[in-house]
Length: 303
Image (cartoon, rainbow, N blue to C red; front, side, top):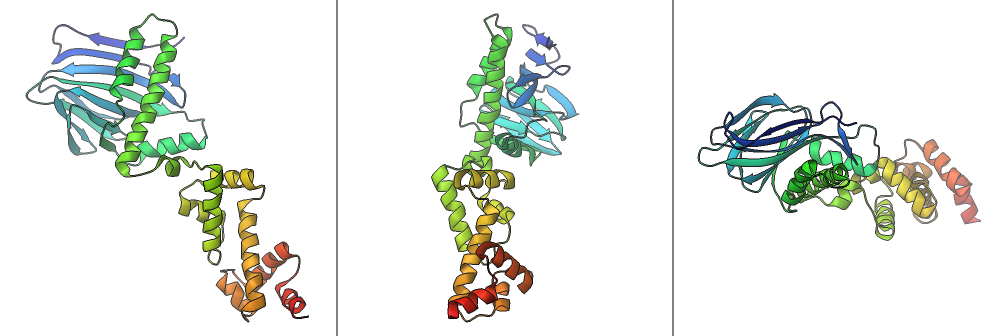
């Protein structure tokens, strides 16, 4: 049974609050797909109202519904207005204050990512949130709708209302990440490590062929193309039937064979050009692929 700490203020002003709806799941976080929900609520307060500085224990998404205010995160103050979307990261000191002229109303959601999940999509989603103490970005995905719907479902007696809360909260986390991507000029395909079967394989093959001389390991390809090492290795093997490391070795041997036949370069010179640690390392790699040593390959070709 989930335990929910609920605080509701309404009607009269209490400590500068017009109303405050707060749902806490601190004792037993609510699982919402890729994340766990710790807090969900909405606050409307008078000018001058403040929330004291506190350390962020969870990621927090704040959406300003109306009015204006400010937030101080890690010693830096940012100003908020209607439509502002503020994302706070974990481990930083954070405070809030209403503006001086009008009511300040905002919705908020506190969550953590599932610690046991290892999906590439989840790991990439976390990267959207964790690098800076905060992000102040424009909302381009109308997240006010799932925000208010999620809060409303907590009060609902309708069938599966908590399931709806879970769905809306996961949606909020994903939509906010999309806003972050647009703000940073990233593409979801690059960050999330997604590739189509055709274009993804072609990009990898083209990169290997264009950099065959200097390329040594799969991690270099993954870094250059913006994908995780494990994901790229699995993707390439699944689509081609050969590991990416073997493909790199094959292309280097293929290129070396052309040089041995046509360039007049020695085995040592070719090993240097292809960035092998030594002529011996090059010879072993060449023989694994071609079934014959470089020197014998040259002799065979001259017969």
